Image (cartoon, rainbow, N blue to C red; front, side, top):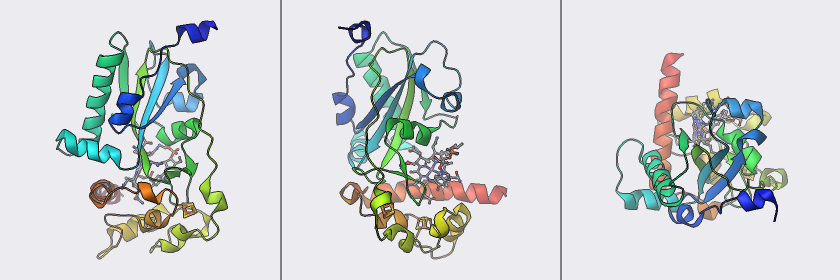
Length: 237
Ligand code: B12
Ligand code: SF4
Ligand code: SF4
């Protein structure tokens, strides 16, 4: 057995999977490119970054079952779950949750490194299993000794998607011309009678991972948050 294997601790994935945090990736901080590392701010004293995400509907079910209410029930639930996971399985390890938090962690860049993220025309990451129905839920600095994970190898479904129904489905034409227009998307989402106030028709039209599409309540919840943020951005301009 190599020194690395002897020092490595097993990654307790099952409790995270049960809690709906069913995507996990461990990075050694030393392996991360400087531009990604910079987004984590102070990393002194930590060896690893643990990236947790969810795919599909289970997380929302867990959040509802937890009874956590408030403005950010998913984030609050995830922070509590991470704290419990460390207390139960890594009680002697130090950790710091950098996402959710105040700073903008490069989550999609981390997703690219983990193999979770392939670009889609509507700017969300996509992969062949979950489609776009996944998100990043926690990024944690830790002085853990897990074996770093290998990236998952899933090709971009967009490269072999002949009719690209997402592009056609966007009522704002925000995906035409080969680049996403945040301005067209936002203007349409904010317009009176918009069909995208609480959903993205392009995302809904993508057939990949359609069985993992969030339920309507979760979609409404998330999209009303992003619509509120778009209103704030627009008011500042
Ligand atoms: C700011 C932000 C937004 C802004 C986008 C403004 C803008 N033009 O960047 C707003 C509020 C509009 C937004 C909306 C949504 N977002 Co958002 N957002 C973020 C956030 C917090 C920061 C992105 C950022 O600035 N990164 C820093 C810069 C330096 O990185 P970057 O590599 O240059 O930019 C990347 C992203 O910004 C992205 N990007 C650029 N423009 C846009 C525009 C949109 C609409 C989106 C989604 C992404 C995106 O592509 C870049 C290349 O990787 C990230 C979380 C994070 N910490 O990364 C989530 C994140 C990108 N969003 C996410 C999601 C899911 C959404 C929504 C679908 C949420 C919802 N259900 O409503 C909507 C999109 C719907 C829509 N059409 O409006 C997910 C994507 C998951 C995935 N599968 O890839 C992320 C990663 C959050 C998470 N916890 O998982 N978001
Ligand atoms: S509809 Fe096709 S091009 Fe659009 S996101 Fe899905 S796989 Fe990619
Ligand atoms: S939210 Fe609506 S306008 Fe924006 S990209 Fe999706 S379908 Fe197009």
